[in-house]
Length: 603
Image (tube, rainbow, N blue to C red):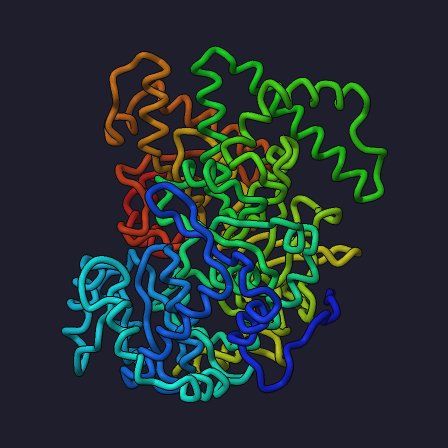
């Protein structure tokens, strides 16, 4: 059994809560810009004083509406500044905030509202209000619904109704919560069943924020630091990062949809980003395909190889092996920096000094590529139950292929069977209304993550996969599907890949085609556009996919290699029920829904 930990750096005062972070920011400098809001294409700063004013008036509205300390309020919206104001206002009123993914179905909304016992719901607009309305038909009584944009009743009305609430009443509610009290109920993504409400305390959020700020000063204490949030705020990682940025005084902006991301990056110019692996995969695949379409494929491929080699050499040097990139490699890197890398950095806004990759595993090859082009990737690790960040790589101590060192105040242990166990300031005190899950998921004060991993001699954690995802073939070979699936998704044509083979004679794969990638692929070859169904039987497409499979197979032993694959006739998406809102694969659901396709692979 191996263990790694990092000492606690900062503590919140006893009796305090998250709201004290905003109060301290305001006291330090009321005019400091904490947020930026995009209005009519222009980013407008929001000062600490303006934010505190908006939050306080809305909190008074909540108190007037009957919300008392400990009550639950739900929020269902895309990313927007108002989401943040509602979150903070809920905490100022002493409430427990319950986020709901804006893509959730009425059935999912009904479960969360019912299980949490929410007393009020904020929605983005009329369309979300309609979903909540359908969900409430199954509740004992309807709940008040307030909209953030468009339709009435809205935030302005709620604020106006709170005018009668005194400052003393607000202060009493704000200071009623302690670090041990619940700040949020975050419902797990439900990859293996019905979502569970994970209790996140004020201490979980606030103490992680203080310690992360001290742990990553090169990112969070950089003068003029700013970030753009496009991971959904219903995800615990996005909320945790928001509190971290508030504690550090980092200016935050929001992007509501992936369609707006590229333009928002260009106009906002963030200094660091929280990125999910799929973004890296799409940017790389698109850039590679565009280069090949423009007849510059050989230049791009050489530039990519150079970036990876440069990053690997630097990584080895940082680990005490070798002296880093040699003279020739440095010269090649400098040439490609002008030809290729600068253009790719411009896609991210041109000022990004670091990216933090989370939510799911990132292929190390991609991490080396982006690090090598001048967008360093620091991979981290965490779960809803750890308030997201539990480990992260550091600037100057970045070991690609690992998920880094434990955050301050966190201890990570590897059990005898390889499972990663965590305890510390970020770990939830338990699940809401679910003692069965609490008994099953905690042991000796440690949370059982369900992930498999190792800790090296320097304390860096490496995740090898999920215990439940590990395949055991008929020949007794253990196969971790993650690395194969990561490599397959690098191909322009592949949106998702599911490796199968439990109890079977060999490993196989289900592949899903990416409609955008397929259209670009057809265009580059002057072929008429193919539907997903047509492409799945097209010999040229199948040959291209076989090439992707061959590439992935080079990364594993012969016994782990994919022998056969089939192309599914549909995408695996959140709407289809096969992906979580944070883009994690619901493996069990996929295998259940595509049993016939899997069996045909072995017939």
